Amino acid sequence: MTFLALVAAKEIADERASGPVEQSAALRVVLGYLHGVSGGDRRIYDDFWRYCRDDAFPGDHSGYAASTHMFSCWQGMVRRAGIRLTIDMMERFNSVARSPVRDNFASRVAKAAE
Image (cartoon, rainbow, N blue to C red):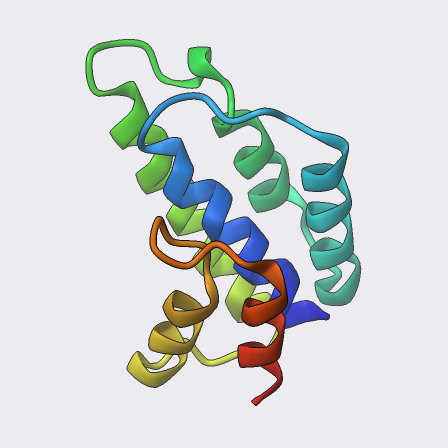
């Protein structure tokens, strides 16, 4: 469950480069769950939430800046979940995360279970 929550958060961070991302109830649940399993300070979860908005970073490169900051928050979430972010683990996250070619949730879940 933690791995899939981290995949969902990574997808949101990846999408943010293209523009604002909806601050949905689903995202709130994902961030709440990840904070719950990690404990401690919730700043990175709050920052991740805030960076979804269009006004988080003013200027021409706001999407890039927000996406970069969200990815930094995401890396912190991974560490706090007790997962070591190696190259192999990053490849696993990328292989499961939504992509334009592969957007079938059931296949992503099956791949994560391998």
